[in-house]
Length: 178
Image (cartoon, rainbow, N blue to C red; front, side, top):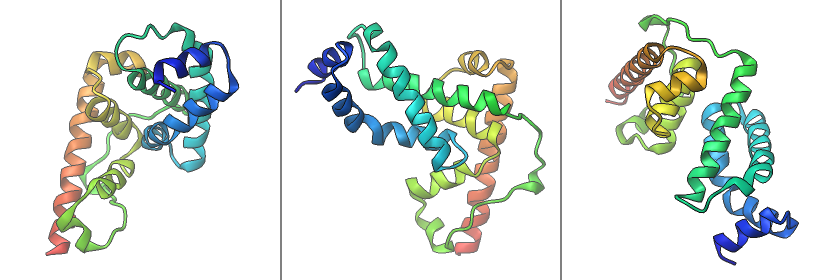
C-alpha cells in the first residue's frame, strides 16, 4: 500500500489504514515527543494526542510537500500545547548552575547523536524547547515567538544561552575524558 493510499484510507476512517499509518510513523514521532517531554510517559501522552489530531485533521492534508513533515508539525504543536499547560519558564540561569547528565567520560571523545540528545534533554526547559524548535525543527525566531507567545528576542536569547550551555558542557566533559 502506498503512502497516498494509506492517507486516503485514513481520510475514510479505515481502522486498518490508521493502524498502519501509526505503526509506520509512531517511532519517528516518538523521538520528536521525547525531545519536548520531561519523561517517556509524558512523551507517550504527547504522541497519543498528536495522532488523535492527525486522524482528526488528515482530510486537510493537500498532498503537497512532505507528509512526514506535516505529521511532525502536528506532533510538535501537540508537544507545545502540553508544555503551555505546564507554563514553560524562560528564566536566566547562571553559567555556574550548569549540570550535565552523568555519562562515562570516554563517551565524550566520540560524542554521538544519542549522547548529544542527552545533553540537549538536560537543558532547562525554556532553552531546550527553543533549541529544538530552532535547530532541529528549523523554525524561525518569529515563528517560535508566535508558537510560545513570547518576543522574538526571547527566542534568540534562549537559543544563544542554550548553545553556550551545551558548548560549556561538551568542553568540560571532553576535559574529563582526556
